[in-house]
Length: 308
Image 1 (cartoon, rainbow, N blue to C red):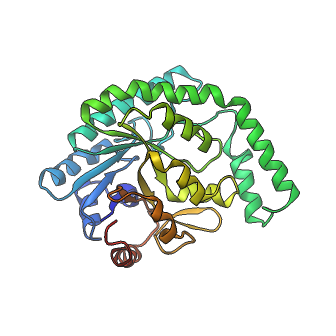
Image 2 (cartoon, one colour):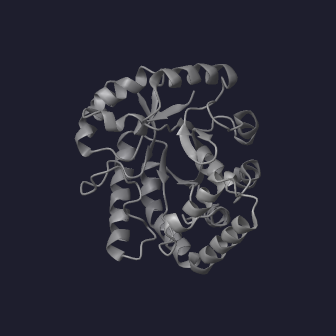
Image 3 (spheres, rainbow, N blue to C red):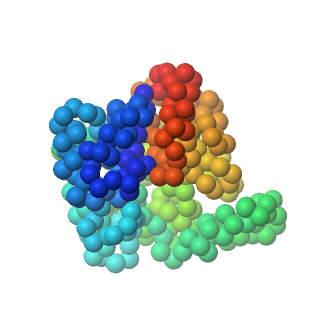
């Protein structure tokens, strides 16, 4: 059965145990402890864990959130930043998160690796998304903008990709100490690191390291699919040798993700054929999704995918 991410109800609670209890009422008993969590909720989560209320399948960096960051911002500090102190803060917070993952006996830690600072989202992926929303995806103007985006990224990518590799290499020893998989997540924005090409190169670079694997995000990849940046099924075929687990959520055309499964456009029946048995699957849903809708979808899931 799938796990469930605390990103859904974290913002509605001040007590960590109450947050856990609300998720348990949905029928899930495995959790992913997600980013955006204030340290004040940690004691309640620990109480619930020690009482045997839930199993921690994984953790999403950074957990808990940096104390100086007042909002849910998993990308507040990036390993790719051009500011050395931000890169160091990212490392320090990840080492702390790995320690906590070890305490909860988590199997994996989901990592965002950063972005290319010369490519502000609004001007690049944001512009492509706006054009698709206007139905311009087949227009010459869209093709021109997409090629411009690709060329811009290729011009600047090497430095930031190398910083991502260096960060993983530094984190590996601690990950091995706690036996936690560094799960490198697919991202939704073309300016994020790694791109699909870079992800394959990264996974090949660490092919002999069992503590570095690929984490598939259904919604993120579908957004890129909708922009014509890749094909979802074809991408899964390419990355399948490195696949460890996935964030499951649905997508409303063209760019609203973190919807409840079976309420959007994703063809799970086809896409799941690319996943090995026993692959961790974690529902990662928007806080706006209603509990009753989640329960209904979970019942459908148990019928359609009893072994997932």
